[in-house]
Amino acid sequence: MKRDEAWEILCEYTKSERLRKHGLAVEAAMRAYAGKYGEDEETWGCVGLLHDFDFEMHPTEDEHPSKGAPILREKGVPEEIVHAVLCHASYLERLGVERENMMDRAIFAVDELAGFVIAVALVRPNKSIHEVAVKSVKKKMKDKGFARTVRREDITNGAEVLGVELDEHIQFVIDSLKPVANELGIAGF
Image 1: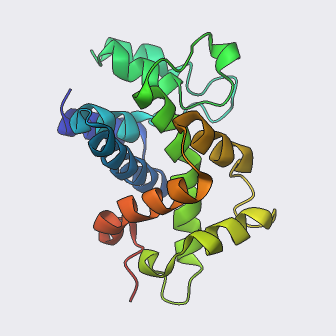
Image 2 (image 1 turned 90 degrees about the horizontal axis):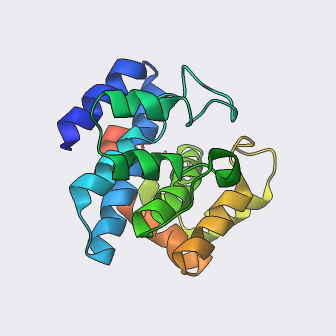
């Protein structure tokens, strides 16, 4: 699957600019991790773009991402990508899937964290990812009122499933978002 095909599917089902930007952020983090692990950046990037493509139609845990998987299959998306999309959920037992490889683990690890890092950047004085440090992300994680829909346990569990220290994981995701900061609206001013 090529990136433009994944982008087309995302845009077909996702009308919200915020959710499209989230897909771009997760794509950037996935591509960076693919590079780190010597994996296919295009495939991993497509997983990042597609992981929440059905969220506007199916915003509940009972439906997302399980109801999106058949749509992806109908569109001819390769099964390894569909499987990884399912693996971004924290409730795998209900979906009947397991994280089998690094791509499956990485999508779970970067999903919540990418969104959280962007939220931290947006409250910085210059709204810049270049001002975000690991310690500021960890401090905001303790503030339950900040970005309250983000599951903190998914962030910490994500680092664990990747087998990296939380600080290292946070820094890696921060760094992966810097090249796409303009597209994400977090380049500062």
